[in-house]
Length: 170
Image (cartoon, one colour):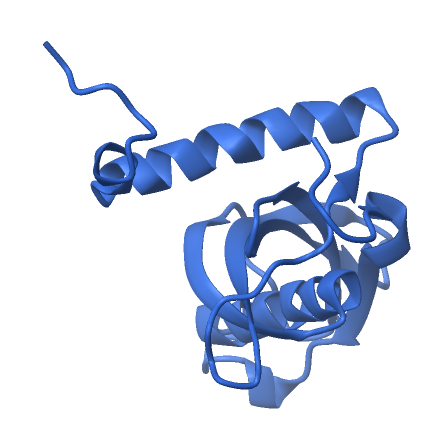
């Protein structure tokens, strides 16, 4: 479950980012724009990716982005981002978004996302990245789930069969 190069621990690159939601982040009803949260998610995941690879990383895809509950003006939004899976040149980052009502102390899970990042060299070509050292059962579970999503992504794009990574059906 590790790749060539200097493998890193999930804990070395994981991060939490917090931001207070202001009226400029919201629609007239006081709900924070989904696009605002999407940018925050991409920024947090991108920071984790660069921390892991110590290289230029670009967003290749956002596999899933599920909004579970609204975020309001005055909420403190906390994004928790960490690596789920590492391939040869790409990685999957999971981001959990929570919103805290600072006056009441209520914390709600408001969104979750899976993003894939690819490492690019100075010529813009994919380059190898460090592997991932898995230390806990939770990290191993997330690795397996990330590997499954990667297989699904590749299968949906027809890449597994083209690369001989999957047997043809029938």
